[in-house]
Image (cartoon, rainbow, N blue to C red):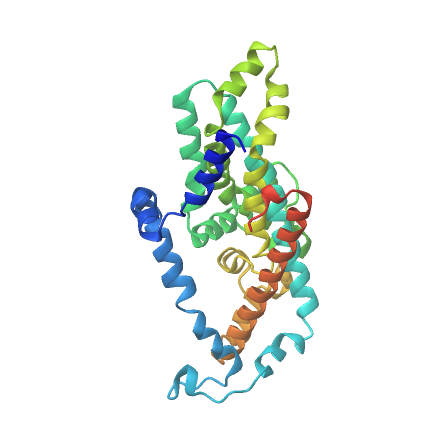
Length: 320
C-alpha cells in the first residue's frame, strides 16, 4: 500500500462527526435568523397538535378537551352524510388547482420580466406596487368588488349602461364567479409569489448569464436555457408546499366575496364556508375540528405522494 493510500485511510479513520454543540456554535448566526420561524411553527403548529383530540370527543365546556366523552369517528360523519361532500371537494380542489397553476405561471412570468428590466429603481417600485394587494384585507377587497359589480349602482354597471348595453346580474349568476374569484386571488397573491421567484433569480450565478451573452444568446434563449432550469427546484418546492393545502380553501376570500348568497353556492361553496354556515348556530367544535383534521390528514398524504413522485423522477428536487 502506498503512502498516499495509508494517509487517506488514516484521515478517514480519524474523522469525527462534529458534536451538536459545536455545530450550533459554528452556525449560530443562521440559527438566530431562523429562530423566529422556528418559534412560530412550534407555538402555532406543534404545541396545539394534542388539541386535535377534540375531533374524537363530544366536547363539553365544563369538562375540557381530554375529559369530554370519547365518541370515536362519529364527528367525521358530518361531512359524509351531508350529501354535499362531492360538490365541496370538487369546488375546493378545482379552485386550489387554478390558484396553484395560474398563480405560478403569472409569478414566474412577472419575476422573469422584472429581471430583464435594467433600471433598478423601476424594479423596486414595481415590486412594491405588486406586493401591496397582498396586504389588503379580504373585507376591503370584497367591498371593492361589490362597488364595481353591483347591478344597481356599481361602477362597471353604470359604465356598461351608459354605453347602451345591459349589465348582467353578477350576484345572481353562479357561472361568473369561478372566473372572478380566481382573478381576485391572482390579483392579491401574484405580487408575493413574484418577489419569491425574483429573489431566487437574483441568487443565480451571474457568470452564467454573462457567458451566455458573450456567446451571443438572446434574452429568450437565456430565459429558456438558464433562468427556467435554475428556477426548477424553487418551483417544485413551492408546488409541494401548496399541494398539501389543496383541500383547504381561503375562507376569508370566499366568504367575504360571496357571503350567504345561496344562488352562488353551486360554484363557490367550499369546505370551509359550508362548515362555517353549518356550525354558525350550534358551535359544535368537535365536528369542525374533525373536518379540519380530515383536510390535514388528506393533505399530508397528498404531499407524501407528490414528494415520492418527484423523488422518483429526480431525488435532488424532493423535500425529503
